[in-house]
Image 1 (cartoon, rainbow, N blue to C red):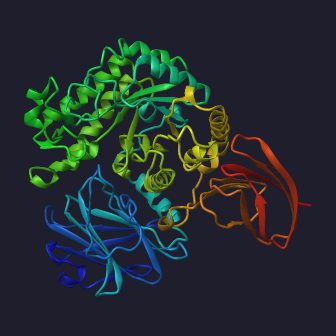
Image 2: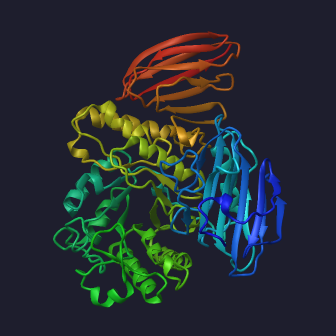
Image 3: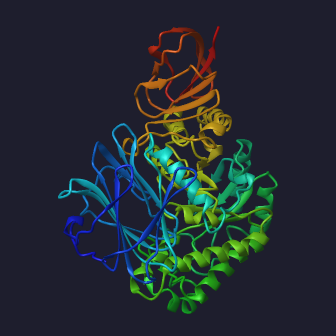
Length: 589
């Protein structure tokens, strides 16, 4: 394949054929056209299967007219979700880094291209962007042809990226090599994490104290983060490798875990099993297996998962932690570090991680009361990881409500199985409850993880948190379990909504008019996640009816009630406190 060209227009030309809608296709193996098969699936998704000699350089080129395109989303797009030029940096995906998928969309939100590869393990280099020379948007997928067909799924044009990606997600789940890891009930409820609340200053007494308070608020899972292990008293990772409990902090970790589980909470602990450092008692043994330094964990090196000795060490470590201490699972961190070995040409790191994660899952399953709870985080949340993890967390964004909202929505667009979890929630304890609770309102569409010292919360903060956790539980069937419609990715999802039958829930994150059609609704809950003290609803014309409107402040106190006699529709401005709730009950003659 050609990778030295600056733009896609400089590559050797190839004839294209129509695929679907306005998308055109060319498939090359070692630079020559190769045959492919296109099949329409019963659900309307199009399947493109390419069979090329194993080991050849396979290139799949997609091209679509620009039309009114405004943005391109992919699983690791981060904040770069508008239209890049095709000479910008490519993205290389693997099992533990993103996924070979993307969605191009127009100003009205409708999709122009939406695709995903069935195979999540084979590394793929994706070059994508606007071709200045061709005046089109292009996507080139470059990979080493695997044994057997390589399949891409395409969703036909849809009214929104969420709609198109939902169809692809269903198809990926239905055709996955392994089913998603089941999700125990504890993974569905709110969680409490020690990280932002306690940092590495964790002790059995401090964690048990917070667990008791978290259980009263309805938390069903305790996540013991960094600091429980021997050597975990500084932010570096030179100590990593043996993963033994710090006896001063946790004299009897198994007894402590049993105490917390007695509160009705499941319990998992953080571990970064691919890290090893020179201060570890095992360093002499592990050093030959960890020749490259970690790019993000200071002081640590990365164990090479292609080595069977590494996999045996990692699996034994994970199984020992769960079995010895009665844990319900693990929070697996820094898995993406394995890809530091991808460029040495000595074997497929992604395939090795596939093997390792399967071995971890199989080792933990008989040790847990139920299906193991395994937390993964962005960027290793691709659809291939569904078989290995069921708590799918947004990557770290402390006190950043916007990032938490965007990352949790992004995570849910293609994730199958499991529950999307927010990054741990923290806020300024000395500021207003309205500002504090916007951290939770930002992730009402996901499963929240709390991480503040609950016993030190101001009374208004605690009361507001208690109210909104109850609302989260009430609205969960819509916002968490329903079909979410968050809008355009480049707008950072300012209006997140979901409807089911005659109920609708809407979370407003920006001061903008809220279109609302009440003709098929009996109840609508609108969350004012802004700092404004009012919402403007644009009501569709649906005849004559009245609406009972009740507004609540951030702590759940009713602050206003009125009945609107609606006829003809149009804009209506209603007072709703910042971080408050507006409940609408529709009554028709």
